[in-house]
Each structure stands twice: as structure tokens, then as C-alpha cells.
Length: 103
Image 1 (spheres, rainbow, N blue to C red):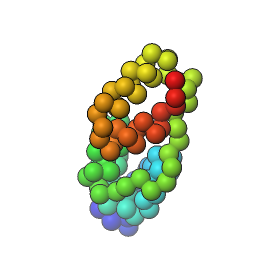
Image 2: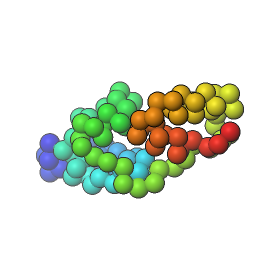
Image 3: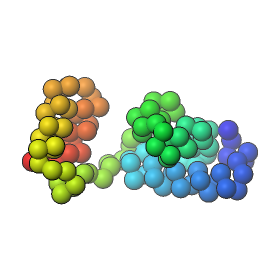
């Protein structure tokens, strides 16, 4: 869908999604969000992951994302998550490890 085809409410929604994407390190424009409006709305509603949205739209993270704060995860959970991601070895797991705080 093109931006000019969106209703006023959809344009506001697209702008809100752009702001959320920026927090996640994705710097797409409102016009680009409009082109993938249904998928962007699905991500905004929690129906698909950010990785799925990025894959479908062909977008990349271009800016640093906010890191997870240590106080948000119990130490045992954090150690387990770090171990699983380290064992996986994929690029996505390496990126996720960079976001996690040290135990």
C-alpha cells in the first residue's frame, strides 16, 4: 500500500510503528512502513516477531538498539539464555548476545 492510500487513522498508526521501529534500531520511513502496512501492524500487535517483519520487508537494523537491563532478568534465566545463544552460533544469536548484559 502507498502512504497516500492510507486513511488518516492508518497514517497515525504507521507513524507510531515508525517510532517503535526506531527504538528497535530500524530506521525505515513512514512510506516504507505503509508499503508493508499489514505486516507492520501484525508486528505492532505482537502477531509476528521483529525478525519476521524485517525478513518480509527486506529491512535491516541500522542503528543501535536499547540493551536489556540486568535487573529485568533473573541471573539463572540470563545465564541459560546466554548459553543457548552461544551454542547456536548463528549471526542472529551473536547479535542477541550483544544485547544481553553480562551475568
